[in-house]
Length: 401
Image (cartoon, rainbow, N blue to C red; front, side):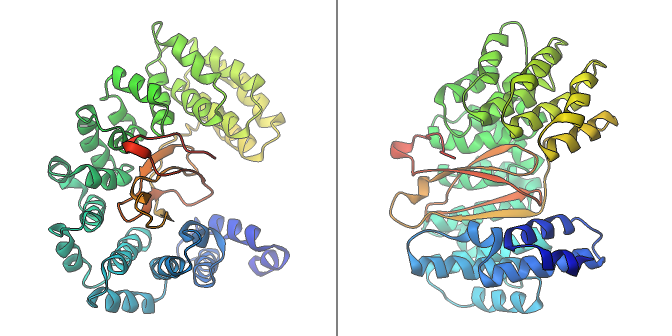
């Protein structure tokens, strides 16, 4: 059956099918087929992996990016050996960091630890190059989240931005929340706002801070909108209504997701009304997810409408699940990673992105000083990406689609 389906599909469809099969049982034929397809894509430079690793017009840098990405995702033991040899060599700074990043990504995605990785990371901790220290901070947050508070306390702004890309881990998110309240640098604040994806953490951030992030209009705005809507009250309702009517579907979706947590029963009316007039399917999906969290029985009317008549298959499927009583939580930590390379033109270290996985949450991220940005913790499946140009004067502009 698997071979028959593959024979009928093109490249993109094959990739999407492999992503679905990867959720099958680990020892099943479908899971094995998915692993081989994704590994082959990485080796041949096709599929989503190569798109994320493709840096731009610099051909030499493209080669430097694709090789560690291939090694990070390959399921073969040979890739472990190649990474081990590469890390053991005295490579130039950028090339060495790329191999270390590949080993860290491999450990996160596949659970495979490359020999020599810990020693290599230790050499980066006290390095003079800020890119080296950023890689150390990011890798440490991923591998030892129980001790991330100490790491955050002594981190520089560049290191904090790197640590923030591990904010899907609850311990990391909690450690970043307090630092967010004490940070004034706009670029660092935008990166730290990734902690708002974890609901217990977002509750610890002051409402004034959320309003400030929204007023900035940068990459932190979507998560701030979600956190603010979850605090729905008479005083905040006008601001929330403005958010769910915003021209940007990403802001609308996040504000509507937040209304799923509102303690005000009239939030159900806002969700139902928004669904009737919403043309963007990602926003309608957010509404269905929010409705699945609501306690009111009247939510079924909108869910039944979506389950039967919505034009989008994912929205119909989500609505049917919600009608069974399943709560469709938005925050999911997975084993997938996005690898972006913005080049080394002197300003790439302030390049920004919003990465939204299948859970719909758009996490803000800032590249390391050498222009590389790896976002970990994504659920396997389709995702969306917004990228902004490097931020002038440490400001954080809104990324374009």
